[in-house]
Image (cartoon, rainbow, N blue to C red):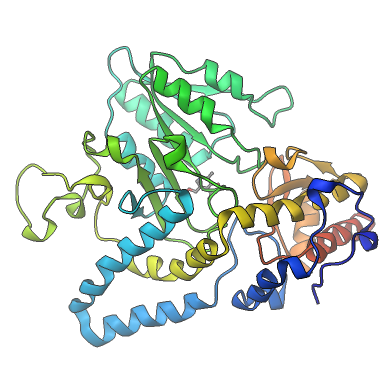
Length: 408
Ligand SMILES: Cc1ncc(COP(=O)(O)O)c(C=O)c1O
């Protein structure tokens, strides 16, 4: 069973702001455990890598197949509006107004469509990113700027090899910057970026901000509208628990109609069903970024996971996440493990990266024992509880790591 234990049971020191929550406080969240069947079969603590599947996903995939099977091509009358509804559901989790978010296949796909709006000749030819960003996006910018003659500015890690100082990122932005391409939450360490000064500096110098919120969405409050982020990308395999096949892209509504992406498809046209030949007449708003035929089964699969995040509420999820990860981090330190995530809860996202020593072997053994976490070379073991996980589970994985380390 996964009862939330009293603090005395795990000897977590008293910290008013990170108290282990009483069971009653989170009864409704624990009741939702039944919606994620994998929790019955394993200690599932890797929701920043592949979020647990919602049981509604299986039904939705059957609905999708049934509709295709029963009405054939007429299914598009249901499928197109459904994909848009799912995009708006993601938008709700990001603080984006309806109609400003579109589904794409992946972050890679969404980033390429954003980049296709810009050129890099002339004096404004730089993209600013960091060494902590997603490798796939780095590969893209390296190749794109080599092809188009732009310059990639990579803000390096601090001396610890893990953190990126926000001031150094802000300092790297100037009048030569076209795009600032950064992650909200670093995938290795969970370090959380203070986005406000980055957006302020970029806008003051006429640059746009492309925020990769993949590791943050569904775990930390992201309010793209309040922060005036120009573009926000992510997908749904992580804390949104929507599974693979879905990327998404938010574009600032007061910017979007001035943009002319070249990485477009027939759905980007203002009248796609006219099948007009000739130069594209862009759809209004974010739909110009919709591209080609949408990934309908992926959107169907994702909806229950997204809906649960929206229903629980991102503020509540954040509070719950901090109440689980802070004792986890502190207990890891007490056990002598190296922690490669910021120690202050407000400076990190929803996961903790721990190196118990010999992390790769410990990770393999944890998987064999049905403690599902993951491992990133050079960094350690990532542990990512979601709102449906318990304090007990977080402590149990640490206990198991200690046992493995001791050779048991
Ligand atoms: C920060 C971040 N960006 C992007 C991705 C994935 O990008 P894509 O959807 O292109 O596979 C991940 C992880 O899978 C990630 O952690």
